[in-house]
Image (cartoon, rainbow, N blue to C red; front, top):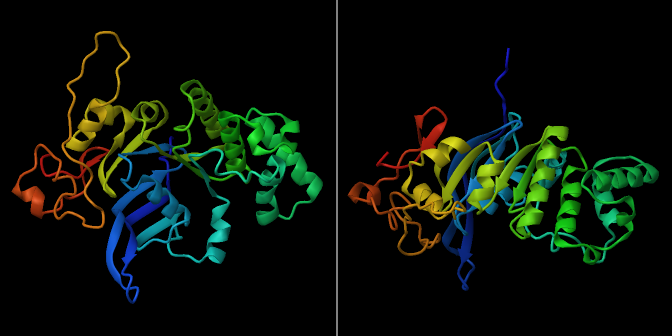
Length: 324
């Protein structure tokens, strides 16, 4: 009997606002709505992609789940336990189960710190193992991600971008976490290096039973890597479906526009490009009704005044649109 995968992370009505303070009296005069009412489940062992334009709230969403940003409203559960709003002290025991791979493989490393010392920090903070054992594990980590033991004595500037990202991956898996958030983890790399890093991530997912939240703007990479894909627009959820279903049958006008922009390498292949007019609205002046109505070619009066319901239109296929 095959058991259904259980939710590892369950997010309910998550909101993250950044207040804009006035220069006088430091009163909040407005809020930047970076994440606006997101609800979803991340299943154990899956790779869930999160896509959308720059500024749509993808990275803030990931950082809020990890506790790097304090949530404004809503609930975040890890294996059924509420972790949203916990203090740093109470959240510490969960942090070793949730790690992050950052976009910039150089800025995420301390240029004055040897690689071995950077990797050893996780064991110093979260374990009581002795120094000899820590050094042994650091060397094992480096070999596991495709580097060499002697690289532990080098500094970040002595490595290429791909090698630095491997170091970032080694740091993320050091404590055998259950979930890793990949925040544009391959976007800063050359295409050939991207393929190597993606292959490594898939290998580690099998060997460590990892769950990935894969944040990216590259829809081609997402299709290749992810089991399900969440499309975000202006901090809100637009569409969620399995990768195959989303790319074969996109329902939301925004998803259709994103997919129409993917380059097709096949000679002679053509696709009707959907062009969106205008730019993203100001998240500090959030539009009423559907957040996409200011750029949607199908928008009508209802879209301007009523927010669409997040609903399941086909098994496992969710969308927020009045026209679907």
